[in-house]
Length: 240
Length: 240
DNA sequence: CGAAGGGTTGATCAATTTCAATCGCGGTGG
DNA sequence: CCACCGCGATTGAAATTGATCAACCCTTCG
Image (cartoon, rainbow over the protein chains, first blue to last red):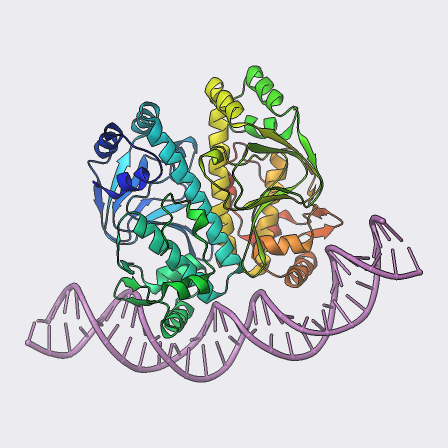
């Protein structure tokens, strides 16, 4: 399958070869970014739609005190904000975590894609609904789960999302994310994340090494997390 | 202005008298619900779109341990999930907090509204983007703000949203929400919410009495919250 | 009148943050 | 080639926040 964007959307709606070709054309000229580059900042006027083709990206907000909260991770195949152009300004920033290849699709291109390819429109709407479900799950995690549960839940989510676009190998996947970034995503301190990761490692549930995660005991990890994949609305219900 | 739904959408796009009439017709036959009734539950098949016309409603999820996290408040004028029918099942539940009047609009009615009234479509898309911004702001609050900041921030948000649909009187507004519900929304315990409310009252920032909130010192409240209204994307930038 | 559900308060406990120090690794300039 | 630097990872100890446990009060409602 050509790229993760096509692969992801194919999982959400039936795409014809014609649809696939249109998606490939729209993402044919991605731009490369170094790590830690803002694609767009809070307060900026929204631009074209971003589609991540390679690397990891996040949405985040900075508080007056300077602390940061990451509100979403984007991995290859993930796109941003279909109708974002309707807003006058961005309410958050988007930044690369690793070096990345990101395609931009202009408003008119999107409109053309959606108008001429109903199945693409359908898939994009579903993707947006899933993204909202993911945000709700984050609120639940941060609000009500203990820190080990929270970390475990995020890893379960990322594993499944990566799996969905063919980016896992067995029970491992690349997670090129520092403990600092994990802390910013989970509303914790890096110190505490470190201790929780150790705890999960000692519990035999999962281990992080040099930018990749291995889920040593999927059943245990899911138990710890209290993970229910329903909010990812996947067509293919594989057990992990 | 006829109802809060029309009022809210009018603030997001120019609506013609014809558009307004169509919205009124679509919400003409609301259903009444008692307090604490689920409109729909996690796992259910999505139904029609809900539009709250009177009363308060929330989206929530229940954890395996039985604790609850509220992920959004819906007040009069707020609608749910434009394209939700594209999903096979709900990933969260929706429940009335108070007695409420809620209109339901079927998929086909929505499609007709959106197709025949581009400005309604535009307004609904903007409303959805704003709802996403609100969710991001919740993640930030729960993840990174202290409890007094968190409470203050939520009150600022709710005040502005209420103000937007004409539901404030001076610096007060109805907030028919128990401390338990506040706790479920902010990821805290009711006991702690109680102490924080006391602290905010003593600080002269705001006070809650019998289902209504008075913002005694807006400037102080905004300061405490570190509140920036940008994420609500309001057209009318009034200072509170 | 009694029961139930919120609200309020105090005392104690547990989870996390904060502060501080050390370690290790990759990259860089001398 | 190697010492040095900066960033992330790791660990310990102290400080703080918020949760938990346990009363008790007040109002509403049957």
